[in-house]
Amino acid sequence: MPNPERMTSLELRASLSLASIYGLRMLGMFLILPIFAIYAEGLPGNPSHLMIGLALGAYGLTQAVFQLPFGMASDRYGRKRVIYFGLAIFALGSLIAALAQTIEMTIVGRAIQGAGAVSAAVTALVADLTREEHRTKAMAMIGGTIGITFAFSLVAGPALNQWIGIPGIFALTGILTLLAMLVVRFVVPDPQISRFHSDAEASASKLSEVLRNTQLLRLNFGIFALHAAQMAMFVVVPFALMKSGGLDANHHWQVYLPIMGISFVCMVPAIIYGEKKAKLKNIFVAAIALMFGAQLLFASSINQFWGIVASLTAYFIAFNVLEASLPSIISKVAPAASKGTAMGVYNTSQSLGIFLGGAVGGWLSHIYGYAAVFIFCSVLIALWLAFAVSMKAPPAVKSRMFHLSEMTAEEGLELADQLLRLQGVREAVVLADEGVALLKVDMHAWDEEAALQLIGKEN
Image 1 (cartoon, rainbow, N blue to C red):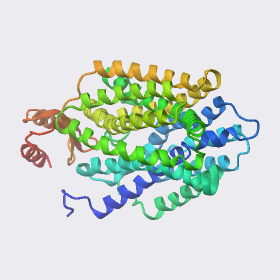
Image 2 (cartoon, rainbow, N blue to C red):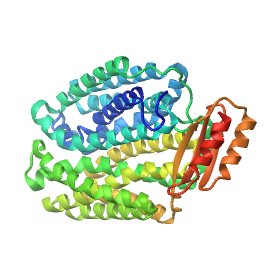
Image 3 (cartoon, rainbow, N blue to C red):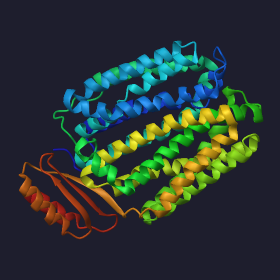
Image 4 (cartoon, rainbow, N blue to C red):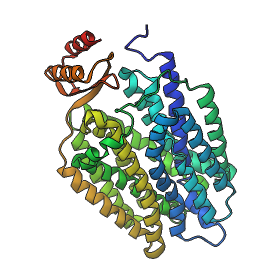
């Protein structure tokens, strides 16, 4: 019988292999960020910054359109089948972008890349292959993969550009995607049972509840603004580094490497302090304020090399804190039975931000110049700051899940009522059709033993 305290070898293999596939999707977006704008400007016809921005952002638009439908399709047609299909689309888009000779075909390739939106299907497969008590760890592996991929890409992108160029990077991404399909086939286990998981998947029936939640709407606007500002920044910063610092695209990693190191060193204690001391809102608001300051600093010093370095340092400290804290806050704020739907809307908002940031950032840079891009970003972040200051502090809770044996809906309601009476239990939902109990409990003090006894009686 598997040890409930540890992931089994199958769970670990599933989590790591699926995290690598999820990371590959992010690699396709991140790897070109630091150097794509410079490459694209040299394509035939000297494309405008608007077209460059559209090429960067097209990925986000199609991802926003397809990621929730792909997740829902995986319930009907099978997880692996949908993942194969999505990876094949992603590989096709990578090939088209690699062979593109014009900015228009590059935009087509990027849009097709985004259409291979397997993220929701991968998350659902993770839920199929892990026990309830270890699902948070598995999702954390995926989250960590995204952060590592982003940091790696900022350094590796310029280096790879020197060796194989942007077309080579697109081709490499396509090859890795084909290899990922082999990982799905031969490394990722097949689930014994595949079913819907409220904590990991979006449900159409819960969308209205999530979209009416004003606290979640603030967070959705936040991830939208954060990634809009990120994509707009990468339309401008590569040119600014080249012109103000005399750095060609192949050496931009020399700027990003120390900055990313500093930002991670600052992020870790901030997140630990916010979680342990129940000060997550304070850390969150402070990071948004720092992001606002970084945008203003960009606007005023975008033509000065050391001003850009200072702006990037402040930006990435804030960005990494916000990227790490937003999913945690979503988990604390979202109703227990709607967490998967809340995360689905959150991820869609992020993708829409990627598209808008690329498109609007490119247009503003083309018409009004670099500073206008960061004035636009400053307005977005200022709105987010106002929403964040007025939001309720997220409760100091953590989520727990427990597997249940078969029971009727009435028995589930009775068990939920009993669990809710226990010390430290803030929310309790029993989903009889899914065979799970979802709890939100106090971070530091709750009667876990009594909960286990109650659940044991039902089992």
